[in-house]
Image 1 (cartoon, helix red, strand yellow):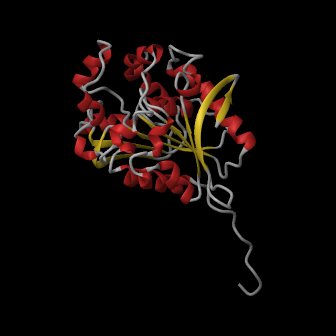
Image 2: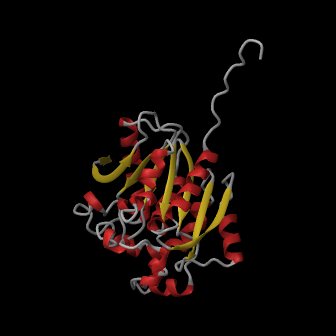
Image 3: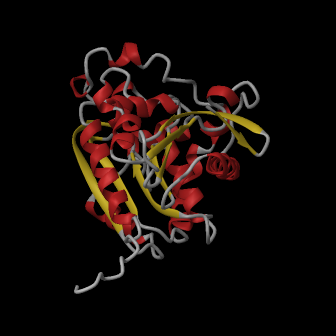
Length: 285
């Protein structure tokens, strides 16, 4: 489908539960150099977040971020994170005007998309209906080798992006041809500023947050002290979870571990949902 993001057309994939109103809306935000299809696991349908979410009663909306998909021609250089935030908000609002969204919005994001999701959560307004944020493959400070690549504006190694190839189903790279896209220049230029921005943004997030790091994650520092500082930065969040995903590389949602990760993310969403309205006791109860 196509969403109106304040006059900019953004393409998206959507999956809705059959025959029932959605319990909530999951907005899936892809990483750099990917597209919305990242969440649809073309190599193995059972690994798709869109399919799983709909079966569990959620609408899943995977949006091509500004500079990708339909908007690539209008924004060949892409946009930095701060300029993507209002466009994502507008796109979700456009969807909500035309579709039921249940209890509210849950942001599920990967890698660079995690930066956008955390930025959007930091700037969320009262009444936006934001339930929580689940991020994979995005931390606070880059790992030493990754930091050199970012600051030198060099592409990351294949192993840093993917990890061991055995973590992905056969046919993944052939099926993902249409998922991979060049990272726009203005977006790439924003990479180096993230470590300084993280603490400022994290302190403003007022909803539950869950962050997952793959066992073979190569982009982010994960020493115990670093992870403790990462969690402590969310001073306004009522709950912060840090988890590791076994048998997974950076692109978790395309690997064999995708279903396990998606189930855990949706279980976290279950915990973020408001309790159902109390039913008045019946006669004799």
